[in-house]
Length: 359
Image 1 (tube, rainbow, N blue to C red):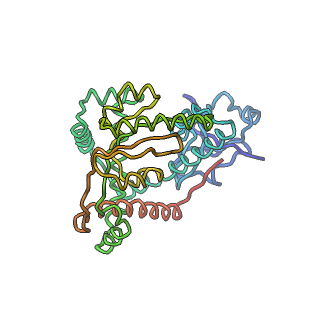
Image 2 (tube, rainbow, N blue to C red; image 1 turned 30 degrees about the horizontal axis):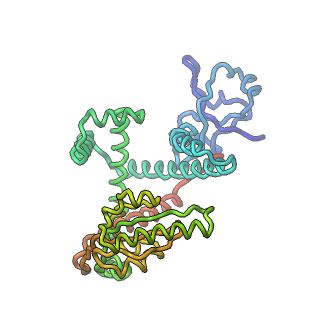
Image 3 (tube, helix red, strand yellow; image 1 turned 60 degrees about the vertical axis):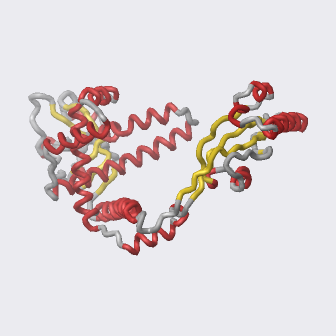
C-alpha cells in the first residue's frame, strides 16, 4: 500500500495525537517520530480510512513534506513560495507545452536543492551560535540608504511594489548577514591568495593588461533585404558610391550622416561609439585596424548590406604591470576561491547530513 505524507493540525478542542491515537496502518515518517517535529504524522491517503477512525471532521490537511534535512523539514508551501514567481515568468514566455514542462521541472528541482542548502546553512548558523543584532540590521539599512541615496519612504515604496513589508526586508537582511558570517567562518578565514596565484592569473590574462587601442566610429550604411536580387545589390552599391564620392569631395562625415541627400538614397548612419578591435565583427576588423583618426573607409560589404566607416578618434591605453593590477587580481581570485571553496564545503556538509527528498 502506498502512503502520502501530510502535515496534520488539530482543530481547537481536539486532543493532541498520542501514539495510541494513530489510525490503524499509519506509519511515522522515516519509521519513527522525527525529533523536534512535534506530532508530524504520515497517514494513509484515503478518505475512507480517515473517516473510519472518526477523524474526518477533526483534522485539517494543511501541507505536504517535500524534503527532510537532518531533523527539519521543507514543505510544499515553502517550495511553492519560491517557485511561483519563476513559474509565472516561464509561462509568460509562451514556450511549447513540452519546453514549458521541462523548464518548470528543472527550475523546481533547482529551487528545492537551493532550499536544502539554505536549511543546511541555517542549521550550521545555529550550531555555531552565529547571531545578528537589530542594531546591525539598522546599520546595514543605513549604509544601503547612503550608497543609493534612498530615504525610508523610497525603501518602503519599493518594497510595497514587490508586495513586501519592512519586516520582510529586515528578515531577509538578517538572513543575508547570518549567512555571510557563516561563509566568513567556514570559508573566507581559510583562504590565502599568494603572489604566485596573482602572477599566474596575470600571465594567463595578459591581453587584459596590455596597451590597447579604442576606436571612436561612425558609419553610413544601406541595408539590403534578403529578397533583393543582383539588381538590388547593384543599386545599393551605386548609392554607396555616390555617398563615397561626396566624402572624397570634402563633405564632413558627421554632416553627411544627417544630410537630406543621404536620406534620399535610403542610407542611414550615426555615431557607433568606442570599440576595441576585438569587439568588431571579422568583416570590420581588417578595415578599421589600419585606419587613422579622421579617415573614412572604402565601401565595406557586410552580411546585412554595405557601409562606410569613419574614425573620429583613437584612444590608446598604456599597458599595466602586475604590480599595478595586483589588488584588482587579488579581489578577482579571492571571489573565485570563495565561490569554489563554499561549494566544496557545502558538498561536504551534504555528505555529512541526512537528506531525504520526498517526491
